[in-house]
Image (tube, rainbow, N blue to C red; front, side, top):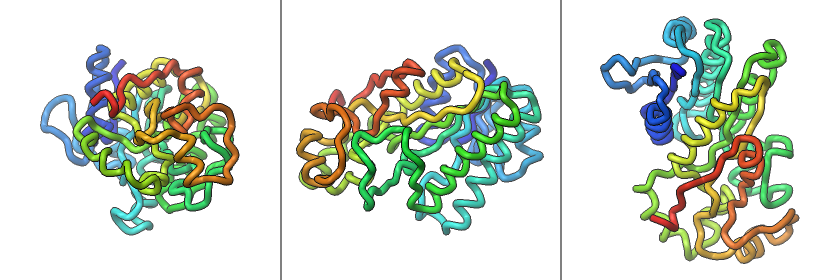
Length: 273
């Protein structure tokens, strides 16, 4: 396929672009910061006309570009940029005839930073979104936008991937600094995702291309901690219902649905690095 990737210069974006190209796909990178070559295009996603022009001729879109977290710019700027960019990408894709769209949602819609404990552990896609920041609220609304667009256009395939905290191999050196304090990473249930496994999930979603809207949590198979899950949950979330087996170090951001429906299987762990 010819695939347009917004935000292809970011940490996750670089891994996605490399993985798609390794799979034989032609990739056009759309980013405010872009190389000056035939496979990249500098683009402001808040300009709808420019987005339509840039997407024309592509067969699929991977939308990763965003202000990636709260607190980087004022909340209003985060909301305006992320919501408008996502609307422009999804609507422009429909206009030019693109039927397969994968976009980056976020683990934050699960209730991060879990100052209010989750309803149960491991968390999954089955409970209502719990945005606790303007950034997270925007991600929730992007999911709802996608859900409504496929109701208008039933043959459209839109997949939202709720990525955990994206890590590159160079980030793994930091993990030792978290081991003595369980609360340092409780904000996302001690989760993470290797960027290369994130790229795998993107490609599997594109290949699946099932009509309609769907959402998946995408995380590594394990936590960032050497301590057992039983110990971590007992200390930090003692009153929260545990559903099923926690496993010794299994991800508490459930990837069961992604495994079952996408064939997603993480290959990378900080423990191997």
